[in-house]
Length: 317
Ligand SMILES: Cc1cc2nc3c(=O)[nH]c(=O)nc-3n(C[C@H](O)[C@H](O)[C@H](O)COP(=O)(O)O)c2cc1C
Image 1 (cartoon, rainbow, N blue to C red):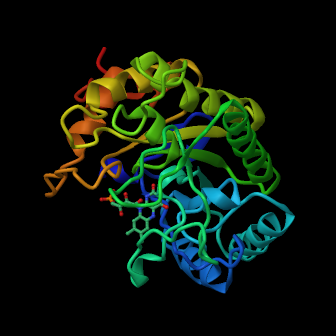
Image 2: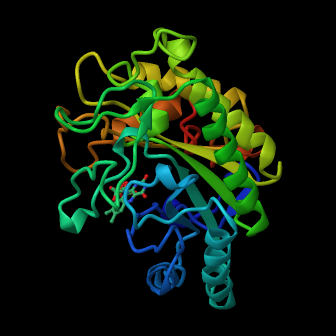
């Protein structure tokens, strides 16, 4: 039998197979609230036989949304809308459900993709002022973000925590923090978007500080028996940007803090990226992170490797 259909443990989360449905933004919410579309979309995925269904990038604050139509989890109304959707799904599916919690930072306040996806400036009814580590826009000529000050950082971190607490109340099995694709946490990681001169910018140690603080706060707030994971971009695909060596340092720091898994993607930070798209082009990035960490198989289960496949778990020791 293919390894794809064998069980996997992610932290304390037992998955029936290795098929995980990646988060997919639908841009179909109203004031952050899921709609019937989400029940249709998530509902049919929940019948697919995958082990885990990840709810799309879900904004922890209104200004954290990529577009005005993103799903959110920042108040009673947004929580109740997810609760309604999950209640219906759970009636027909026992699939495990994760949620990706996100803040779009300087990539917030844009039009939905099928209407062009361009930035909507703050003086427009459907736009707002964006925030970021530094006041550098995603594209030249865009309205720049405001650099987060200390109280802004505390507010963002608290919003991630509050959303994780709501996710726990909703019975969601795992939280994935969105540290990839050029959104806020990735903006802190990359030297191209983070030009801060305080303890959150400059050295690698400083650039990973805020994402790690958010991870720690969410890990502490979410029930200990449920997984918290992180999605990362393994590289910016730009010289002088975030790269796989820095990703490995970040992944190892996450591992020591109890991160249950790292979901390795890439790119999204800058329009000047040069992505060598092709079949499996991201696999070497994931393999490098996997080799440098041990978080995917608990020690207790290592003896389950068949004799003829002693490196099945590929954890580099
Ligand atoms: C419609 C759509 C929406 C997406 N939304 C998200 C998202 O909310 N969060 C995220 O991390 N990735 C998002 N992605 C990227 C996917 O999670 C996934 O990485 C991508 O489709 C590549 O799939 P693969 O990894 O199976 O090749 C989205 C992709 C699509 C097609």
